[in-house]
Length: 404
Image (cartoon, rainbow, N blue to C red; front, side):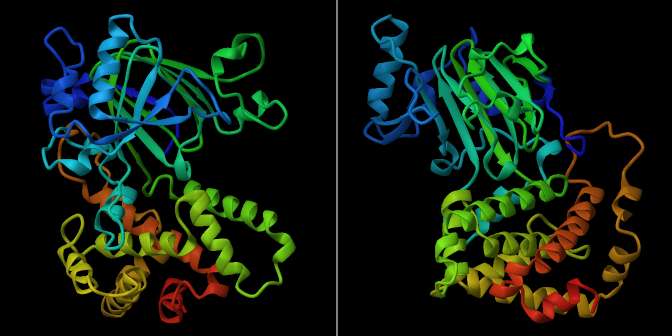
C-alpha cells in the first residue's frame, strides 16, 4: 500500500469464506438462486446495461430480483443478448450473515469504519458485483481516490491499470476513453499493467490508478473502497482539487453571501463528502486510535453516538463532543503530543522484522500509524484557509493540533 502499486493476492486470502462455499456450485459456477435467497422477489435492483454507453457510463435500469433471475437464465439459454451488470450492490446491509472476513492486510479501513458508526446515515462502501460473461466497468479512478480491493468468489476477470497521470496520454477532446480495449496500448508509449484474476484471488487497486475490468466469464465478487493512513494524503489532495473545480464553476457568484458554504454543498454532491465530514472522520480515527484506547472502534465512542441519537444536527453535536474528548486527552496525556512532534515515524519501530501470520488482529504498529497519520492529516486540514474561514475546527483543538 505504501508503494501504491497494484497487487494480486492468492486464493489463501479467501480461504474459509462462507461466500465461497455457499455462492458457488461444486463445478465453480455461480449459484444464482442461493445468492438471492435473503431478498424478496419484488425488491428493486439497479443494474448497469453494459451493451450501451451514455456519457461514458453504462445507463442504469431498474429490475426486480425476479426480473434479474429471469434475465440470467435467458442469457445462458441464448434468449437475451444484453449484458447486465449488478454492481455497487449493498448486499451486506440487508443481512447479518458473515459471508467473508476482511483480510488483515486491509483491516485498517477508515471509510467503512466511520460510515458504519455515523448517526445520520446508513451507508457503507462494501459491495457485491454480479455479472454475466462480457459485463465490464469503464475506465475510471475510484471514488475519493481511495483504495479498493476486489475478491473473486466465482469466475475470472481481466484488469487493466494505468499509473496516476498516464490516463492523460489517452485523452481525446479532453476525455478519457470509456473502453481501453479501443486503444492500441502496445503501439505507443502507454505504461500499463494487465492482470487476469481467478476464483478466490483478490486484487488491490491503489489510489489514483485508472483501471478497467472485464468479466471473461460469469463473475461474482466482493469489493470494498477504503482509505487509511497510507493514502489519506491522496484523498485530501483529491478533495481539494474537487473543491477548486466547484469554485471555478461558480466564480461568477463568488461575492454572493454564503458562497463558501454553498460550495461545500456542491462539493458534497460532486465528491460524496465535504470538508466538515472529512475533518470529523479524521477526528474519529484520532480518538479511536488513541494509544490508551483498546478496541476498533473504542467503546467510549459508541456511547457518544448514543447520546446524540435525538439531536437535530447529529453530526455537529457529535463533532463538538469528539472535540471535547480529544482536548481532554491531549491535556491529560501530553506525552503523545511530544512523541508525534519529536518522532513522527515512531510507528515504524514497532514493525516486526517478518510478518508470518496474516490473520492476526490489527497489529499495534498499524494502530499507531493510524494515530500519527490521523493527527498529522487533521493538523494539515486545520491549517487550510477554507477550513479556517468556515470554522470547521474549533480554536482549542486547533491550538492542540498545532502545538500552540
